[in-house]
Structures are given as structure tokens and as C-alpha cells.
Amino acid sequence: MDLPRKVELLKIVEIDLDRWGFKNCIAYLTSSIDITGCKLRIVPPPGARVVGAFPSWPEYMEEFLEWKIKAYRRIFEEEVKYSFGVRLDLEGRVDPGFFILSAWMVKPQGDELMKLVFDLAASFDFKLIVSPIQIHYNLDGSKTGILELSARKGVLQGEIVFKPVTPIVAGTVEAYIKDDILPFVVSLREVEEDIVLVEKYRLVLRLPDLVCLG
Image (cartoon, rainbow, N blue to C red; front, side, top):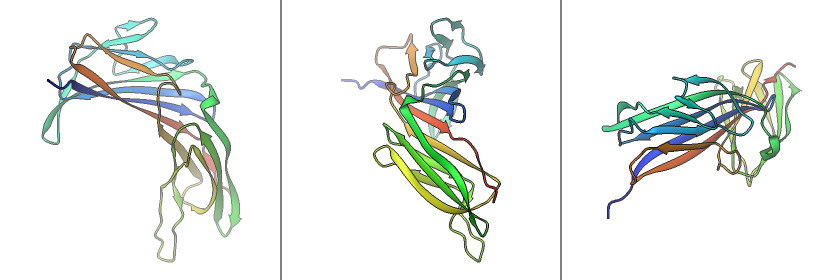
């Protein structure tokens, strides 16, 4: 029995938590199969309005968006791959029910140090990425510019003393989620029956920038 042929799909939705607003969404296809001529169909997340499209606007744009795929060929680890992707710039407010931001702030600690205070919660696993900050510093000036922290059972809270590298500290929450958390429906049309779509859905939440002033 022949195994089904796979097309990998990476879905990404980016949200600005400073205003709880959509920023963009991406659908990116990769496969050893030439999918040129097939159709990519997208239904953006609820509440999102499409204000831009790259590399082109869809051929159809009513209850869903649809593109005729023109895959580009590339060599990846000595294997031929075919890829196609679109990015949609979005506007619109996000329902904040799936993520709780209870604390995200910095406080002066003296001696040019600051304290980062955070309390985040969700119904899914996630990690917090903070940059640029200097935590492991000593007399020779070595430093760590990016900090990654993983939530436990959907909760991440604590305090970290650090030395600012720049006046602004940025934070990002990243997670792999399912469509029942934030629907973002992407499908392939006019494909052969033995082709299956294998999805990964990445959520990116941009936290408000923190100003480090003593």
C-alpha cells in the first residue's frame, strides 16, 4: 500500500498585545511535490480584516481568500523542495480570552539594575522571549542578550534582576496551538487524493515594550 504524500503547512498569527490587535498571518507550504496549479484557500481569524497581501492579492476574495499556487523550486539538504507562501497584513481587535497578562513591568533596583516582573497565563504551553537584557554579567563584561523562559502548565510568573542593554526591553510569547484556540483555517484545493496536509500553527504575541529608566 502506498503511503500518502505530504505537504507541510506552517501557519503563523502575530498579535500586538499592547492594543490586543492583529498584526499579520502567514501560510507557508513546503513539499517534495510540485504543487503548482493547486489552490491555497485561507479563512483569516475571526475579527481580522485584511488590509494587505504579499506577494499578491488573491484571485478570489469573498467568504474566503484563494490563490492559484505558483510554487518555487529550491534545494534543501540535497533534496528538491517546492514552496509557496502568503502573508496577510491584518487589522482588528482580538478576543483576549485565551491569554491572561496579569503583570509585565520593570522596576528600578539601583546600581544601574532593573527588576522584570511578569505574570502570564494561558490554556496552552508557551515560552517567553525577552531581549535585549544582560543577566549573566561580570567584570569581564560578558553578557546574555536573549532570555527564554518556558511556562509550566500554562503559567509563567516571577521576577528577574537584570542590567539593561538598551532603554527598551521587548518581550514575545510564542506557542504552538490548535485552531480551537484561535481559528485560522488553511486548506489545499484541487490536489490529488493521496496528498495530505500536515499542519503546524504558531502563535506570536508581542508584549508591550518596557522602558528602562532608573
